[in-house]
Image 1 (tube, rainbow over the protein chains, first blue to last red):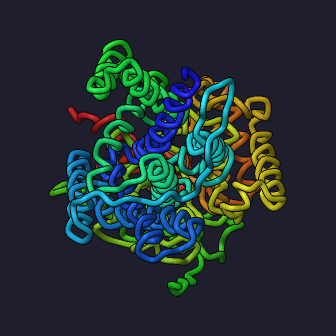
Image 2 (cartoon, rainbow over the protein chains, first blue to last red):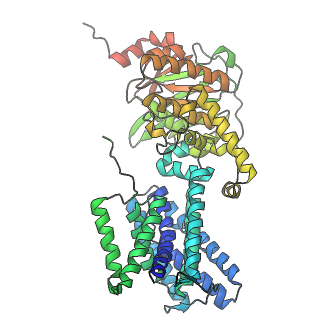
Image 3 (cartoon, rainbow over the protein chains, first blue to last red):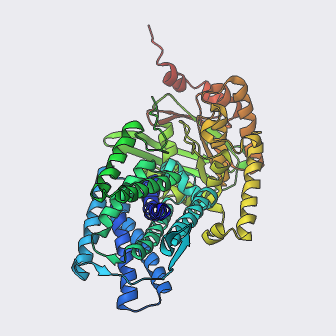
Length: 290
Length: 281
């Protein structure tokens, strides 16, 4: 029983972590809290639903389409809504992000209706018995996918040329430009990676909850945002740790029969961490130069 | 592709900034009637300069004279209000900062702007970036082409570090380096972009006399090894006089004198700009 709860916490935490990684990467490079990020996940889930239910496609193709759809949408949002505001005050782009979020939610609602749709099981992994606990295959897969995604992302950012360009742009965009780094394509690439993670999260979320609705991204996005800030926004390991903390606290609060308090506990945690360490658990302290 | 301006360097009027060996070459950097206004204020006006392919020259002048503004114009950070800049005969008009760098101009900054949370090696590799052709999937999947490229890039970076004897610092974070080493790393990062012209904004600022002497030798060595032109802004007169073949003196956005270091030193307008007008009683 305890093991099952731990796995549930890991599963939910993994999904939050994947979404939080998308928040943290975009924030890291252009200091934008991309409030539309949760809605990209909603979009990805709908792509999967259309592919599976409306078009009756093979689940593997549906998964690829959902991830690809998220990548295209993420890059498009940056090009259309954010790129023209690169030199504008940060508040303008933040408000635009909120606007994009509403546009996506209401756009999908207009086209496909406000009611939740049922996503059929993408792949049935059954259950595994470990030490007398029943563990769901989907949960195990979710955790495994998140571990792989985090490792690949870390390698990408630390070791590759594009990763180095990303870190350079995030530290000093002007200096990076003068060193010949193509800043626009580096930012597009960051959105593409963050959105691909959102696509993966969309699939894992659909597998876990088997339904999609136009507003599903709101709470998911907010919780993941809390996770990113809790872990220290801009930090990759921070996003993963933050996601796991949020996931675990939700699952364990519910396990104690206090599920109405789930959300309150998450936000309370955020407040406590920010009071003690305003930069988040792994965030770098900002030192003002005098 | 823009058409190439093939004006050759000639000794039009003596004195000018072009060293003997570069005469007859296409100027690697040429600014004509360059100027910029900020609101109603003219920050730089009628700035003309032609730099030979292996020339080391300097821009000097009192604080606020517009020297760094000239660098920002030459690197396309600012769009000029008037005039043109040409690199190796190609017009820079309408080019972005990135394109200007790819065309062959690289710079350092008056207030050091390294990528502090990246290692010394990584700082140089960011500079190399635009000249490497490795692909994303190869990078992620760690294919042989990636390794080959990584090795080439690291070897190349180490060669650069050797210029300043900084090989042993390769894995330190740039932000943790001592001040002098940071200034040198900025020069190496700029060199990694394979420029034709290197712009140095106060390279000797904050260095002690021994470090300044060493830097002087190294700038000459860089010029000789890489066969590039160097244009620098510097207040340390020993450095400027010791290394520059030509000097332009800027005051209130205008060039008030041009010539060899000796000629400039004795120019009454230069003395006036630096020390103020002598009172006649």
